[in-house]
Length: 71
Image (tube, rainbow, N blue to C red; front, side, top):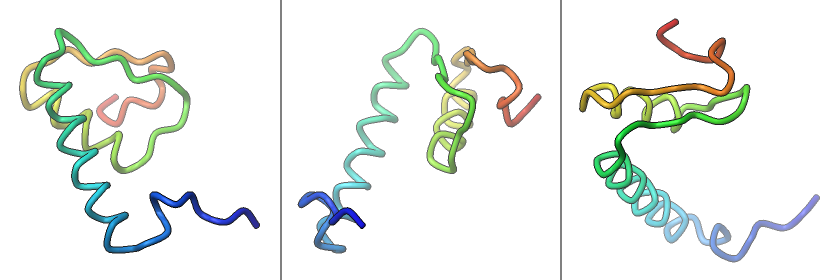
C-alpha cells in the first residue's frame, strides 16, 4: 500500500484542508459562468458541488451526461 501524502497524514489537518478546498471550490463556482463536470464517475463532493451550482442558477454540463444526478 502507498503511504498517504503528507498533506493527508494528520487527520486534523486533513479535515481542515478538506474544508478549505470545499470553500475554494464553492468560490470558483460562484465566479463561473457555467460548470463542466468531467468524467464518468462522480463522488459525493462533486454531487454536492453540482447541487450548489444549480442552487445559484449556474448551468451545469457533463462530458458524460448519464452521470447527471438529476437526469
